[in-house]
Image (cartoon, rainbow, N blue to C red; front, side):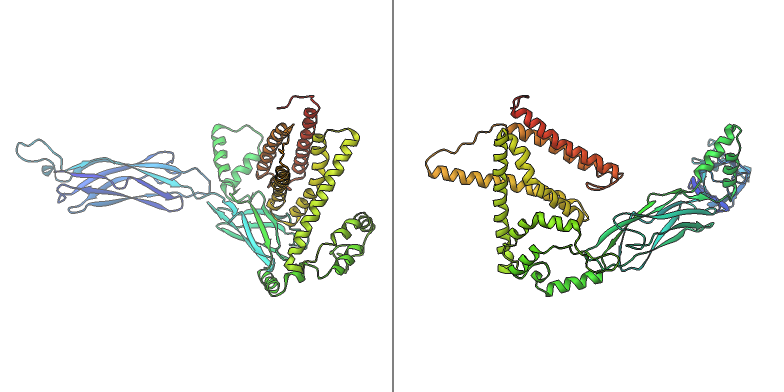
Amino acid sequence: LCSRIYFDPCAYQCLENCGAVTLTVVRRGGDISHTVAVDYKTEDGSANAGADYEFSEGTLVFKAGETQRDITVGIIDDDIFEEDEHFFVRLGKVRVTRLQDALEPDSAPPCPRALLVSPLVATVTILDDDHAGIFTFETDVLHVSESVGMMEVKVLRTSGARGTVIVPFRTIEGTAKGGGEDFEDTYGELEFKNDETLKTISVKINDDEEYEKQEHFFIVLGDPKWMKRGISALLLAHQDDTNRKLTIEEEEAKRIAEMGKPILGVHPKLEVIIEESYEFKSTVDKLIKKTNLALVVGTHSWRDQFMEAITVSAGDEEDEDTGEERLPSCFDYVMHFLTVFWKVLFACVPPTEYCNGWACFVTSILIIGILTAVIGDLASHFGCTIGLKDSVTAVVFVALGTSVPDTFASKVAATQDYYADASIGNVTGSNAVNVFLGIGLAWSVAAIYWAYQGKEFRVEAGTLAFSVTLFTIFAFVSVSILLYRRRPHIGGELGGPRRSRIITAMLFGGLWLLYILFSCLEAYCYIKGF
């Protein structure tokens, strides 16, 4: 039997700055008591001898009993960013030192004592380490307490750290305001020196002891600036300054050098969410648990309610300059006299202390129901006076009168809640009550009454099918718009850039006008319904 000689393994990887790479050649099987010599030689691939590695050629000698020998090839390091390159090491002629032992004796066919087998070529890949780096935050969202004081954020440099790189940064307002209100505006530059991989940004967070606070702002990294140091940087600077047309070789060199330039990573923009101080929130929660909630959010007596109803108030806000209670403005007086009737009316609602708040809740629901009925009757009389059909009066005046309060309630929910769920849920919940409870309860009462009278209760469908179909189509369009607004360049269902806000408001307003237009055209038989 003959010995088999080959590379094990046949593929190697090394960094450009490793100095040298060692390859292993093994002898397996057969009689290993003989001395065997094997020639080897390096061959260029995408890596070139003398520029990327040191040319090597020689002979490996396996002495009696030896089964493994190593080949060492020097690797040349430089400051130029390059794509990963490779070269080959090939095994050549194999021979046994004693010629008389190379063949089997007697009449047996000739058989060598040692034989080259696959893999007889090894591939060495040189991994470049000259990239200037990829700069990024650790994550794209960071939660901090408003009591943290000075917040520190890490900026990482990965995939290389060659040369000096300047990375600009700045803070951008979101719902949290800068200028010392919620945080201190911060901007500047981070200087990463050669082989430096970590820097920190410090931002001061102001504690205003606001309960259930959740506001956000952003820290953004700018495009990294490569200081003109290192051969790759000098190569780019030289080629940028010349106006002559580059050769193919120079174009390739510039392309590779461009690949080594510093770039931003996957998290170049960090959203910082400022939350209430955990200690402050815990203290407030404990106080609320120990105190009757009615003392905090409710009223004690009808006298307090009527006094509050007839008093002109400037609200609960304080003057920003003096910190004292703000005096009523002219606008506050005008709004008071326009709404004093409703204030006095709802002051008749029992205080929240009575029956654990149930008296207040039930009475409020009854008054709202009565007001809705009054609005419906007034709208019907108005439509009859000017000669409008009942269906047109319903979709224009009745719906408008009952939905305006929902609109204002949604606006309040949108400004007080961090997410859009409360404001959008308010509209859908209100409509669900109108349809399922309002229509269902009213029709049930009417049906029971006429059944008690021994008569049939019948309501003609009229244009209901057309209106419901039109409403369903527009509802799908509205939901599609809300889903589209979740894209990153807008940011969510509500708010966003000014242009997006205006376009969305115009689209929704247009849908409402189209609904009224088509309903009126169908009611007056200008278009055919179903």
